[in-house]
Length: 288
Image (cartoon, rainbow, N blue to C red; front, side, top):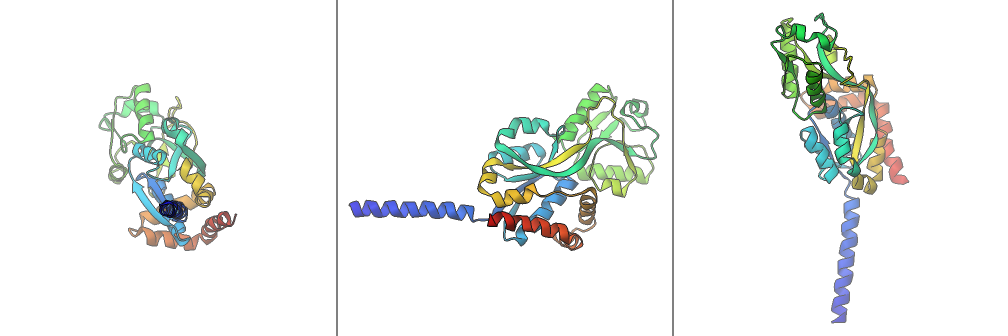
């Protein structure tokens, strides 16, 4: 009986060791993302680079609130589109105890109300005088997005006689393009970096009350437990940073090619030094 118990104990111990080892050696990363151009671009680039180093990368798409909940709860490991210190502050305040900021991946981010350059207005306070021309609407994106929360506050604080409409990013861009093609006035919730500024001549409306904040950074966050167990992956994301030119060209490459992987591979060849540097981060961390 003792031999049987001893054998079972050894088998159970070995099974636990194997389970822990296989989990740590699994080389799997789940990246959550929202359908925003800059986040999609950085997520897809990370996926290809990680896969080149033997990782299995799973992507999970959702609205921003479920994304923060998923990363905090361990249903996803990484999110690369956290705008701070203003846009996503409420989500970091709510979930921050289970999240770790891995680094800044983009430095010169901005949100606000955006209009075509041909419109003569330059200030949010001028919107009411143009409400009828704008058909009483501000074209927004998905409800719950940080920019939409700030937009709602701006409508209230500036006492705007305009309705903030929710839509997908794609629908907002379609309305923007249609209006510009017809040289019609339009105002949208916009942000930079985004390829819309490459495709159209646009401007941010001045925000005297500072509701949309000033320049923000885009940060990569990770689930704390995942970061602790996966130092190589954490090192990769800590070192992931793109310049204005790099991110702009990456977004443009994806926007102009329906084959995401092909677009990324082409972009990597054109930015080989950066791609090599990011890949070497994983190797260096693994050696340590």
